[in-house]
Amino acid sequence: MSSTSYTFDTEDVLFTCFDQLKMHEVLAECPRYEDLDRDVYATTIEEAYKFSRDVLAPLNAVGDRQGCKLDGEGNVTLPDGYKEAWETARDGGWTAPRADPEIGGSGMPAIIGAYLSEVESAACMAFVMYVGLSTAAARVIKRYCTEDLAFPVAEKLFTGEWGGTMCLTEAGAGSSVGDNRTKAVPAEGEAGVWLLEGEKIFITGGDSDMVDNICHLVLARTPGSPEGTKGLSLFLVPKYWFSPDDLDALGDRNGAHVLKLEHKMGINGSATCVLGLGSKMPCRGWMVGKEREGMRLMFAMMNEARLGVGVQGLAAGSASFQYARHYVHERIQGTSLKNMRDGDAPRVKIVEHPDVRRMLMTQKVLVETMRAHAYRLALQFDIADEHPDEDTRAKYLRRAELLLPICKSVCTDLGFDVAVTGVQIFGGYGFTQEFPVEQLVRDAKIQSIYEGTNGIQALDLVGRKMRMEGGRLFMEWMQYAKERAAAGAEAGFTAEAEAFNKSIDAVGAAAMHMAGVGQKDIEAAMLYAVPFLNAMGYVVLGLEALDQAVVAKAKIEAGTETPFLKGKLLNLDFYVANFLTKVVGLSKTVRSGDTSCLDAALFQG
Image (cartoon, rainbow, N blue to C red):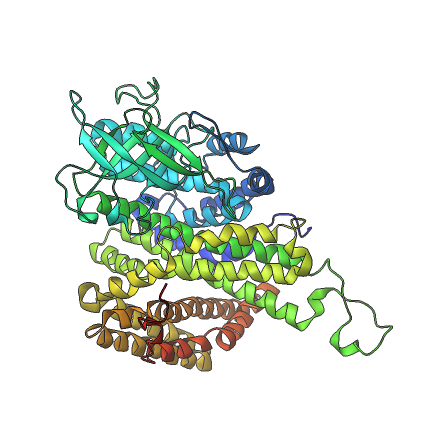
């Protein structure tokens, strides 16, 4: 296989899903999934890989080079092949694999959704963003819109006939959503209809020529509403107006127009739009849910998006690793270190060089632990949503809520790092467009920024999630982490388990320190939110390496020894030596008490 050909490691996916997480057994306890079995899941995994390889991957470079085009009427044309690929995705059921079958979906669980997001994003990240936002919008519409809109509009989005967006950000407000200025007033003579005025920026998929209509979910402030997020309501704003009685008969153009396309460093096939509401003609919409509960409803969409973005980070890393692992067997350069003094020594493939091996192993270990973490988190959301026992649902929801900002932040930061390492392995050629790894770096950088920057994720973890229910979520995680370390010790990984226990204790000590500082000086405490998140994140990923080593060792001892399974044992060795050691250092940083960067005179303009 060539280093420019798209490949994906389905062997590791199958191991993670079935051998480690045993998703087929866990989900069998949930009535929604009791008719699905391992064969169904495995077939879906294989078919999704074929779709990604054959349909999406050929679009990746094309979309990057061509980008999107905007005409004078606010209509966007996507790169060559996108429209045809969308139709193929619709025909194959890939636009809504998680939706209920009666509304155009396949009824798959979130863990399969995470895999689909990874394998498809690794093939063509820009294209997949249209799918992800449309289905996330559809779920909000189906759950919170009025009865006459909920089912029919959601079905249009799930089946890919229409598209959907999430419209939060405004110029000058950015991540401070409560500063939004978009307004909504009741339309005279039209019951239930509102007129919106304002401008939204960075709207992914704000328009495209793949679908017949676009449904924007827009945050706006109604008359008399207070400032801040508590005053925001959510509205469904279509590109073309329609009657709820007949969605197939699209009406006139609504006043939601793309005013500008952003020219970005990456994901160029994804139309990132400035959206004007009411700037050219009246912009009408329907309220979603109740007045002034827009942020609560939007968070339902944002939580799904944040998991999806974490998986995108994983996808960038996994794609880079696959390209690199093939390239190192193609590229011949230098001699082995053992023969470097011999001028006649044969030239070797670069995979023979120790530093290249170190970089490859770094990629491998981070990708495989991130994958296990993201898939586990998705499975926890499945259990939280569908398990018949209320206490079980509540327990897994607490665990998933705590770890969501870690998944989004750690997987996007480390996924980017893995993509950069891929360029380093390719050397000078990696910096050229002759090979696909440079595009992965450009595409991946946005992931640590959108859906809440990683700094905001750290504030969410430390300032909100860890304080919920008097610290219950964090204390339960500490106990859960200790239990997993103990399971590793019982399986024979005694020294590794001891290292994990020390790291878990270091995270606990950092948390206690921050809690104490926060009572006196909130800025000094939050200054170290990101280092704390990273320390906890390294433990979270490391526990996946430990779990996988336990599973692999049991299979080997049962008589099945393969290079893949041996690799899981080596993964643990490498992780403990190279990444788990960072936890104690980060904990010391958090507890250092240094606030030098907060000096008022330091960065005066």
